[in-house]
Length: 145
Image 1 (tube, helix red, strand yellow):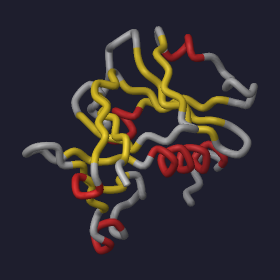
Image 2 (tube, helix red, strand yellow):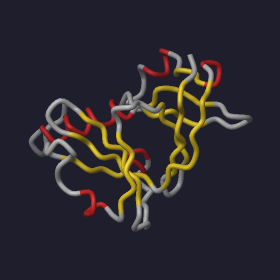
Image 3 (cartoon, one colour):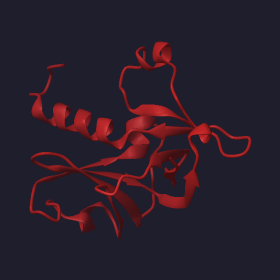
Image 4 (cartoon, rainbow, N blue to C red):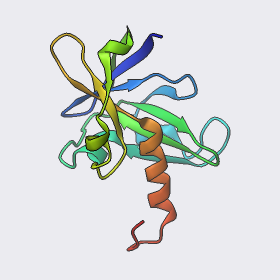
């Protein structure tokens, strides 16, 4: 079954995500233009994908894109600089991470690899990133999970 894959850019990197219809993609004029609630008036947490994945990946763009991931009680807006391409891909172009590697990652944020032509692009799991951000905001400062 073909998947719809979107490629996105942060200030320094290119990533891919598998499109899910419940995740909204919004063009915004800046982080403050997004507001503090989602379309269902639930709290909205905002985070920059670039700095979440690479602390040196800091955007200086005013206009951004937000992937708004709806969760049970709130939503998370994951910001990036651009959403550049949309591809319908077959299963052979998407490879999940091998279990040995997947289970050694500190976070379950990378689902696998997308291989258009001769390049390898990490496929992010936006739901896992959003859930981790919710968990982090729920913990008092100084505590770890």
